[in-house]
Length: 212
Image (cartoon, rainbow, N blue to C red; front, side):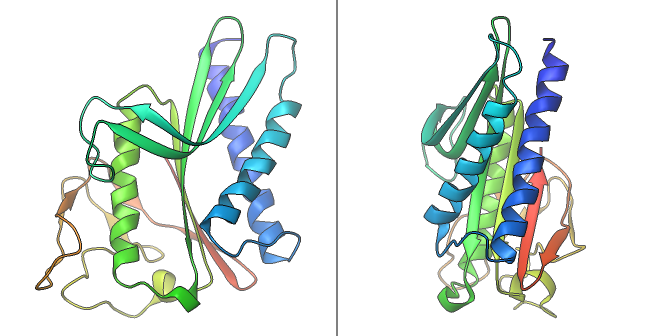
């Protein structure tokens, strides 16, 4: 299998798993009460689908949870040259391998941790950009929440308004993001890519998926 075909099939697996996950969650087919269970549910769907995509004897789908990858540069998140990835996929045959990394966030309204949650989303995006520069072919960021605060809140405070991924909002490459509070939660961030944030809503849940 040529590399481009392998990448397309890997994307198809992840995109299908995402659609299954959000519909099962929103309709009660599965339960996720925290980020760990959210990760496990997506991991199970991915593994099941991935095995169905092993069309030939040489095709292998492998999934790892909470595994480390080596970076050429320091991660803001880990403050080292090693980064722990929520989900890491290898889809390979006897000639080539495609790698995909997925970072997850799961925000519950009852555990309202603001505005730090918004900062952490951009920190994850910063990490994912590093993954793309270090041999990971496809990267995804997936967020699930029952709180419309992240999706369509009218406005945020001036101190933290930089960290904004509401529906329809855009981030332009190189824009500096700052906490302007007396004791900032973290250092300023600057991403290398443009982003447009588009949310999915299924029943009472909201989902954000970003692919790199």
